[in-house]
Amino acid sequence: LVGSDPATIERYRQALDAEIQRIATRLRREKVARELAAKNQVIAFDTAPVLGEEGSHLQIRCRNFRLIQAVRSADTGALVSDMERPLARFAEVIGAEGAKESLAFIRDWLHDPKKYAAAGVEPPRGILLTGA
Image (cartoon, rainbow, N blue to C red; front, side, top):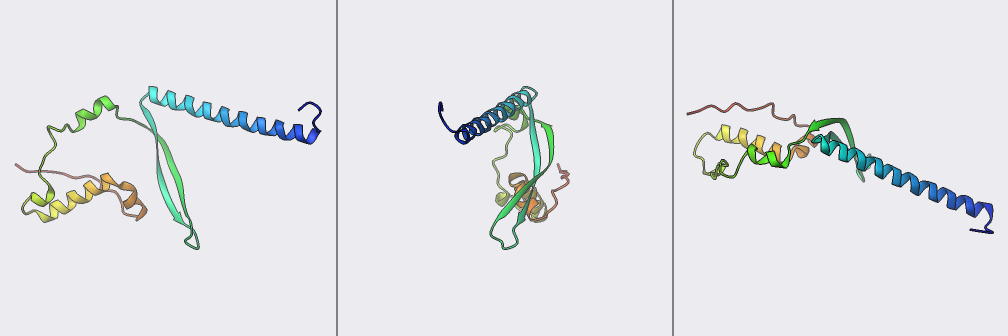
C-alpha cells in the first residue's frame, strides 16, 4: 500500500472495516448463543410465508420472537421412553374412527406444524383422553 493512491487506500480501509464489522457481529452472536445455552433457553419465532405478486418468489417473514426454556437432552428420555411408547399403529386399532382421525391430526400437526400454519389452519387446543 505504500505509494498507493488515496482512492486505493480508501477501498482497502473500507474492506477492512467491513470485515471487522462481520467478525464483531459473529462474535456477538456466538456470545449470545453461549449465554442462552447456559440458561437452557432458545429463541422461538413464528413464520409467515408470503408469495410474491408473480408467484416467482416466496418471502418468509419471522415474527413473534420470544425466549423459551429448552428441554435439555438429558430430560428428553423422561418425556416418552421407548419402553412407554406403544407399538400399535392407528391402522391396527379397530373402531373409533373419529377419535383416530382427531389423534392423527394432532400427531401430524406436532410432526409438521409449519405446513398447517402456512395453510392458515389453527393449531389444536389440546385433547382430552378418557377411558378404562
